[in-house]
Length: 317
Ligand SMILES: [Zn+2]
Image (cartoon, rainbow, N blue to C red; front, side, top):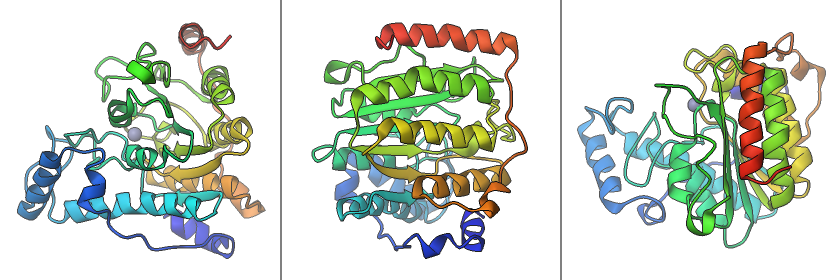
């Protein structure tokens, strides 16, 4: 759906489309246990059951499917290394996959892998605005001192995956390089953008990444059936703008992430693609929701409280 929206608007006069190769097992072993990769392969041949406790089905061919998705993100990194400033893999962003387990529809973690592959060459920031916590990415890179991991997400009792509180800040050499912004249900454009500017933007300005990986999950949108955040497409646009202003000369890889309202997710990915590629036209404007959304006072106060705590912990005043 996103590709169609882009095609109709002539995006591919400005964007080169390339075909990725599936990732090799040896590459995956940089971030995943051998045993786990073997398990996925076997379950994929079997074609029944689950790769985790019941979220991620092991359909026939999921091993190959997951490897081509990761290959897409690795290709994006290769494009950056060959001189492009921006590369996009809408089919990437599997941020829940952990070192030795699948989780939340994610099998292999392309976000963590490309960060690992690129960290010798670049100082990297991951900015994850999917509505769920980037728990797999966090787990794999928790003590990594070359990658800043920022995740804004809904955080609430019994809400998946249950991690991502503000006091999870990294460990060892990576201490201080994990920035979690847990947001209450009902967080709309005003509170989200406020929290983003006060935390993520300040951290990015200090860190000065050379490569920024954005996980642009569409499930923070008000129309999403799984997440109760209330961003509009205009809110998303603003957040991406804030990132672009904060990272100045950084190269950018945009990955899709989740999104379970297909209509709004396709529009969000199209708008973000145009925005980071510098494509402007009135037929992009009509993809936007009519209006910005606003949070209740109750939600706004909760967000203010958590932002103050984050600013203290991360020294962002
Ligand atoms: Zn999500």
